[in-house]
Image 1 (cartoon, rainbow, N blue to C red):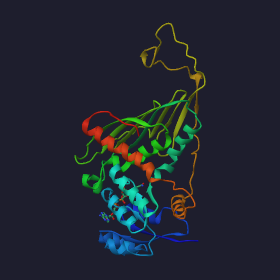
Image 2 (image 1 turned 90 degrees about the vertical axis):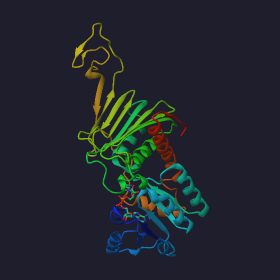
Image 3 (image 1 turned 135 degrees about the vertical axis):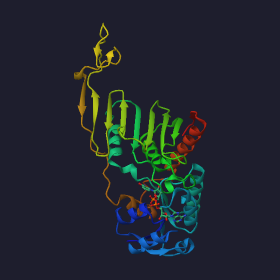
Image 4 (image 1 turned 120 degrees about the vertical axis):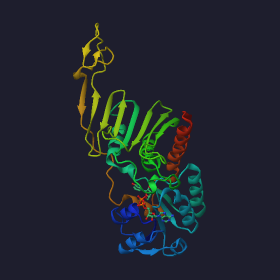
Length: 352
Ligand code: NAD
């Protein structure tokens, strides 16, 4: 069995997670690390890796087949290009780049060198998302007209490079990239407009809160919202179809589906009075016209080593890459437009 040696660029929190926690098949081995921090190199060494404080020495190693890039976001493109030009296959942490033109360059360099290039969009396999995918696949809710996906916390944005604009900090690059990717992977229709509002609540340099609305050709409207100053949180998923609504409350996967079993509505002659007050339109629906269902099981439960196994098999051309850089291009284009929309405070029409 052919063995693949991987070197890590940036041995921080996420790289350590890749090294110690993410499953890998036997033929994928992390062997080395390069970092600009002496402390992190010591950590990498203590965890069994050969360490380098020079990128050139690190990358010019013939025993290295591939690299994992897990540095702050502003350096992904340069390291990927340099590594691919040395003939190394590349796994890049998300966001793959700061914008779609950087990504175009990365894809061109990967093609020119005939190397595999993928992005760690790991949240495509999260259980909450896979439950939503199952609901969509089974057509449980009828025609879907609204998807809302949210991640919210209350501790502000971490006081690291994540708060620095020049490093590609901010919540759009941090979490927005995951949630947009998830929604785009779940919808075949094209995005026809983008509107985004950014807020700077706990500091003034990078977005720590934003709301992004994407409108699709088929009429679907999708909201992605990230907040870091929410002491009460919205549900993480809310999906509305013409015949039902699904909600996932939180990461513990509690939630429910309300499904219509009788579409007929008997409108009252007189305005009914309910908790809503006098309203004929918003008075509650008769209980026996709906049923409450539990959330289904996720459509996919991957093996621990699915990501690295796929990477190794893709290098051997035995299978397609699970996460193709061209897919992340769509996400980066949406992010470009979201920033433009936020700057100009207007809806941007598109065909993505
Ligand atoms: P971190 O700050 O813990 O680690 C970054 C590491 O890079 C540090 O060791 C730092 O010394 C090193 N570094 C900084 N600048 C460098 C440079 N120019 N050259 C070489 N090394 C450099 O950050 P992190 O949380 O590990 O995030 C790293 C990347 O991983 C980011 O792109 C982030 O978005 C991504 N990430 C992904 C997930 C996920 O679920 N996919 C989760 C967390 C982070």
